[in-house]
Amino acid sequence: MSDLHSVRQWAHELIAQHLDDTWSFDFDHARRRAGLCSYTKRRITVSRYLAARYDDDENRQILLHEIAHALVGPAAAHGPAWRRTAAQLGYTGGRTHPGEAADELAPWVGECPSGHVVYRHRRTTRRISCAVCSPTFDPRHAFTWTHRTITPATRRAAATPR
Image (cartoon, rainbow, N blue to C red):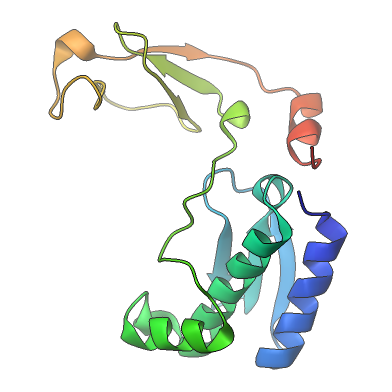
């Protein structure tokens, strides 16, 4: 598990090495995505919740992923130019991060009749059925949703490395 101060230091070093001084770094409160490159704000952010649970190498890879986005621009998306640039930086991952999400911070918990559980950070607007039980919507496998309160203590614990 990484120390958030170390992640911040790595980010500043990598930005200084590969980008100009108009770019900045910060942590955000994302619970499902690991990092973000904002072209309009010229800022790279990393989820404080997820960075606290990932190891040092994973966090460095997330930073390299986002720096590659900053270098190639928004039109490149995850295409060949981005892949080439990311590889030159030393990035070894894929288009998305396969790591865990901060499910303990999801206020909506859905359970299908077979007992499968899913987590949502926003209230669903339509009925959803379990993809494990049926590949298409099937009302027999619809989720029953429960709302849970996420306390400030839970948020602090999620942002603290274990």
